[in-house]
Image 1: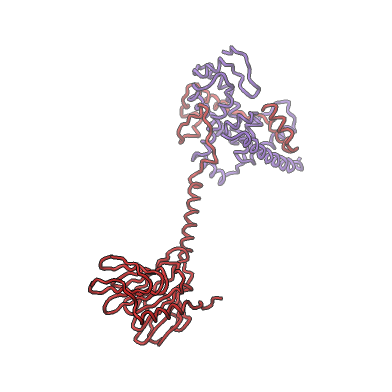
Image 2 (image 1 turned 90 degrees about the vertical axis):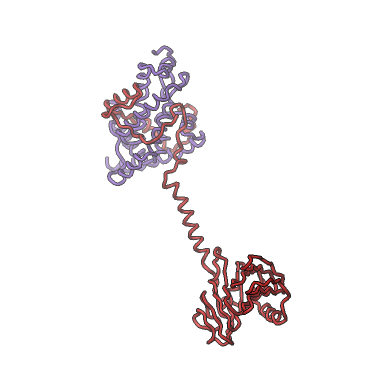
Length: 203
Length: 291
């Protein structure tokens, strides 16, 4: 299936055009390769964004079903990453607007602290202890941001998508994306510094 | 991220921001459970949601969109919840209600400017003396009694002996600015001091309706019928029997007979002229308590 070996950028899609054409035609092996290519990435993005693994799993499945329904309009000549994340963003936004999210938000507010640590963050063996601490702090700093701030930071800095691609996904002008991203990063930096300073005497 | 983007942003970040972004980049990607992955894969390959034991759909009550074909995501800011959609409407409604209520509050009141034989004057007032504030309602003068009232700085009216009328409450500040004096019998002279009234004043009798837009006038109700006399300004008189309206010229009188005889406006007589002239010349009096 991997006939045309023209790998795309690191954070893009490594599937070749033949595979993508197979995806468009819903060939099982191509769909499987496509799923394996994007599942962890989509799920990881959603789990960090939503800070809830169960919900991230549900929405990942929803997003992939939507992808399946619209896959016949996939352009095999182009990197599908932007298209995939557009579907993911739509799925999340539909969820945010849904009754379920609103009731879940109410329940969270009343019953439990909102800030849930990210589960299953398994660091690689060669990561230093300090990096573990920083990963924990950045998770907490992300948790202090609004969902919109987290969304744009994750798209730009975690998924490493281009400004123009993010602008298209969010239906914004590139300049608006830069401004929104800049403000979000400022808030993230402030939260990160505050948490780090707070954490320091405890060590 | 493109190299240009990276270069541009790297130059602009503050130390803690750069540090946070570095930590973010090193953050390990969370992984789902194997079970969820398998279920999602099966659903994706078949194009159908999994059976009951799979992850439930988190988005169940929304219609399908063509976003999978590259459609743009809905802008959250532009899609308001029901509460936020209703809030501006509720605020506008509250403002409208308050403004209407405030606008309907009168800014003036009736007060007595002159009384002749006060014991024969019946009205709703704290006392029948000059300067007393008068409430809306029935007003009557006995034989030999007269009372003169003024509404703020707008209108002065004098009721001659043996008159009976219903006095309206003062007009509202912005709204509710039509006022009707019902004259049951007797004579009433009035003036605005040469200025436009600023609200609509109507006199009703059994025979006519007279809408005044100015300025010195008299309305009588006698054994013969009802009569309007005009010194200056304009009055539109409507006959109740036929509905016919006539706009009167200054220094004319229009008597509408009880028995329905036809009539036309005619020049005022000398007595009416004298009384109207006195009323006009007297103008408006200072409002008690005002500077």
